[in-house]
Length: 102
Image (cartoon, rainbow, N blue to C red; front, side, top):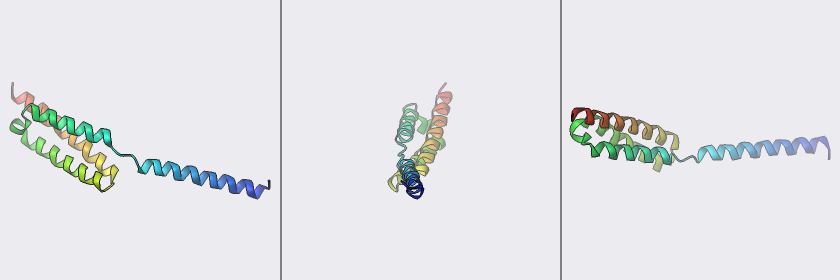
């Protein structure tokens, strides 16, 4: 094999690896983050956050709606960000609801 052919094969291999890596990154669906947010919101509702912490719960639900919309549009990065934020607000809602019931 000539040096030119070996270099060409190496270049093609590098391009193939880069393409495969980018495809893997682009297809990450934030399933776990979406699930965590939904479960945390449900947990907040169970402790009556809609009564004791309505602002935090409402924000969590709106963020979850935005996460779902972003997911449907294929914007997985944005969906993950919204889902994580939704979970954080749901945690605040749950904690506030529990503390206000004491």
